Image (tube, rainbow, N blue to C red; front, side):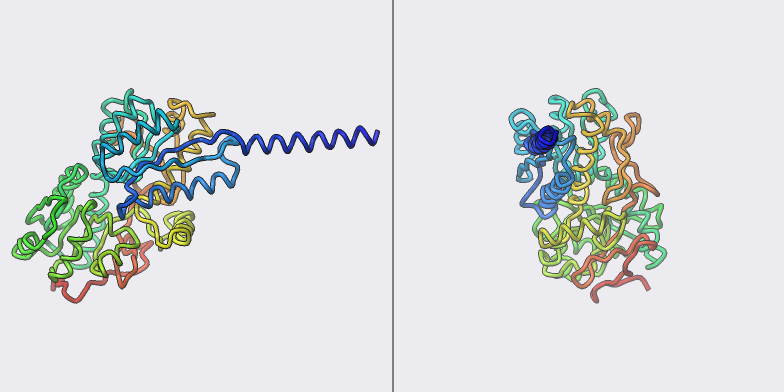
Length: 409
């Protein structure tokens, strides 16, 4: 009797060990991450994705399978990104892709997601066209999700904040729009031209500059001649040069709006402090508990990589968890079942509560925005730190400007 019990116990222990070993040896679920690893705004995408995968794997993976991040550097090139996407889908056999903060890159990948039935989400591109394609051709483009705000939505957040910060608080009345010439700024600027006047800021000029611009002197001279109260920006591919020259030339108007590179903790060093006073839009910040996950993620990222995460890192981190959850609810990696599961996402991430809009919405597969979902923040560089200044209920400081700035009297 004792021998039987001993043999039975040993057998059970062996079976348990074999089961554990099988789970460890299970084929990984591969998620491809295509990003601009040498760019200020791109490097956080693979970094954050790897952090998320590590956390998921510590909890046992997905249905007993670990998550493996397969990273590709697209060198800010749409053609390189397409080649990486094709390799990820056809050779490396990834189950989903997280791709880029550059709209032109994502727009180039979007048709391939449809052709190859490869679920894809972008953590940082903003062009309205991304979701418009899903709306207009759902059967082919349903594999694409937008994990960041569309340009029109970003402009609305900037204008809503401007009503409080620029108009009510600083008594400003006029503005100049200064945006880089890129796909994502076309709808951004169109909305700026509507929502800035509605907020109380007359638009006296609209400047679209080449991303290859190196000397901003003529642009700033023109702006100063027009004497607006504020420069409202839409810059992402450029960032360091216009900011440095704004400070060097002592341009007296505050720089306010969208500056993707300014969201990165390294931007103070990259501009040698010239970014002091610049106000920029973000969806999450390291000093604000947008959700209970925001600050812990930012702290863990800084501890691991030596700097706070840039704007796209928050979304990339959330995206891995959302794909993992979709795979779990879909019961596997069948792409159509994954898409159906992703469409039912209701996930509290680092940037807020995330739900995707339905296929009949103009921003199909884009994130729902508004109270209780994704709302956005405005932050300002002050003495080497990013300080959240809007909305008031979560602000960690008030606006401060360098001495050369001239505010309305």
